[in-house]
Image (cartoon, rainbow, N blue to C red):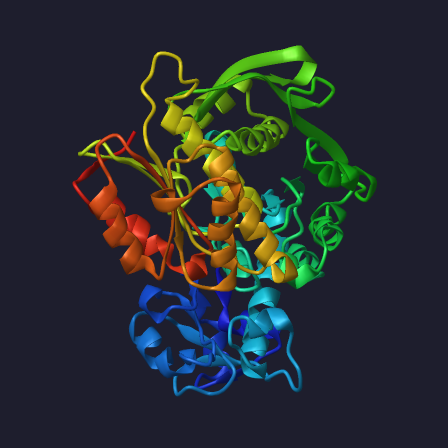
Length: 502
């Protein structure tokens, strides 16, 4: 963040100073980071006191100041220097309610957004480039690839993990400093208008739209509604900016009509696109190689370090952004070759000492990402193209895909059937709800029976089953929405028998 006095921050957010005089506030500066976790506060920081249903940040205000914070951004006086904002009366937005925040929490979040917007405006005036990325799946992986390909060009700030909502987004903006050249922002949505609101905080000069799938279908009601919401990002880019669109997704390609910015289309094997991939192949661990075609018929060979055929489109989008920012093809190729998985629990491949390979993709799941994960599992089990290689046994350990609404039963049924069609050796369905029963039933109806498809109650039962059955050489995919809790299962499997990373 840029250095600001408490008096300046109070003016920006429309708050009043408590437990500090106006004169002192003029000369007391926030020189550290803004944090909503009191344990993360350091010297010169600003603590964000969020009141929630389970934990009230106001109760930790004094501890935050003791740890080095110069003040607290709060909804009420807390006995230490604070900037207090007025609670929002009446109803608050659904997005705020998802954080278990009341009107007081909404006021603190609004103040955080105002502060981030003011900081972003000043940093852009000083030369900062803001890159925004959205899509139904692949946002976090692409954000990590973007950080890798832009790093050779200057200092990069990107969110850790999936900090992509009304709290994590402005928090990430406030990580940028006058030394930051590129700020990468991942943008998620659960309701129409969410992405527009995030983009208003830090308007991107470059926007990336990956795909339109069925994630959060239960919230939006239709794929068209999802597409309209994703389109809020390219609509937020001015005519002097650039929008990178995945032309292989027709709903994304159509967004060229709704933006005033210059459009760069990326595609797999469609030479009509501005940036495209030719001669795509996968190695035995589903790492892609391809020829990148870009400006004026230039080409460069790309070898990805991340796993899964779906990463080709993600890498193309990242490459397109880097090329627009002045990177050479050789710089892009070198950065992508070194860019392994960064954010945890996303297609993280671990080879255990006993020869079992664990694919930990347990952080999140929707039908599109599960299909991609299953395809990668099947490919690895075949040893790539399968020629001259002994087939490995494959285990798909799947938990519930959340927020699919009325389509939950049918989508889980389709995934169970797909596992059979891909010739997965063993499907382990974790959970007892209707959706998980539909996944198991789909596998059985598609032709799997007996021990080939099992449904277990919980993570502990799944771990017991896997420890009893896994043998050297097996490949295991663990995939589910975060709420299913399969992250713990993936971690336990990875820790068994030691590990080495490819």
